[in-house]
Length: 304
Ligand code: GDP
Image 1 (cartoon, rainbow, N blue to C red):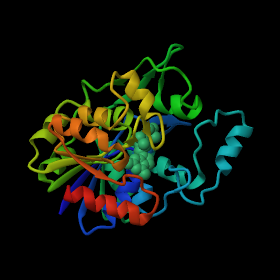
Image 2: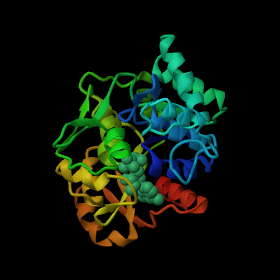
Image 3: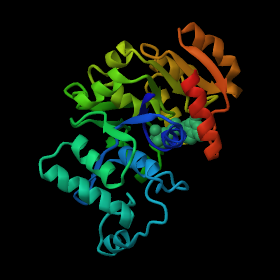
Image 4: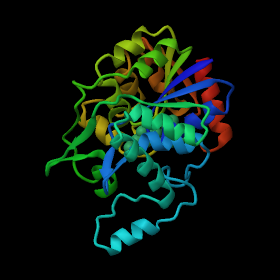
């Protein structure tokens, strides 16, 4: 079974682990809107979360970075007066060094990511949604900023007036992404921030059409329970984008290509409204607190 999974960060990682534990051929399409240059290195948080998760080295407590990493370089940078609000571990740095070198040699992000996957002998494929520059910018009353700056540096505190995807209109889907979606037996949208993780991928011209015209059914897991996400700024960003911050809102954002969505059992009252949108709504325990729960949800999703 060829499964394609659209993925963001922490919530997606849990479902990816569940999917990878099943007998299937997994291709991850990763968000690139959060990518950021730090100390001259190109950091791709969502690609790396997928990479570390599928390689079995992810730090599960933080939801980012490598398990058991040290921070000697970061400490040294701080002592030398550099900005260190974006924490990079010593092992993590190796990934960014390899990627940045590959890009400097003229390789695409797709090629650099393929090399990173090969170096870790991954069975799954990870594809950046695009090789074009695409950045999610958060509009705050003070100024606009990169998502990492908003969430990591400012702790998600600034008021949000809107979100924009800079470069989206000129961005192009890669042949690998189009091919993977076209050949998939199932497409899944992982639980992820619908505005800052899935939104940038859907803003690439042709992505929604590729998903809608795929022969495979597309199903999603909602990242929300009631009016709250399990983690992160999803509710704040959904509200700022004029979307109701709940599973009905999530289904609405994906309605043109989504066949089914799994929402949390506690949101039973929303099922009818989602079904009315033309999206089959399934109720399940969507909180993934163990490997067993991750696997159960992955299985349920493929059967939905
Ligand atoms: P973030 O909003 O910047 O953290 O971006 P991510 O794409 O990394 O978002 C993580 C999303 O995953 C959040 O919207 C969470 O609500 C969601 N999430 C985290 N853990 C779980 C979980 O166990 N189950 C589900 N369904 N969603 C989760």
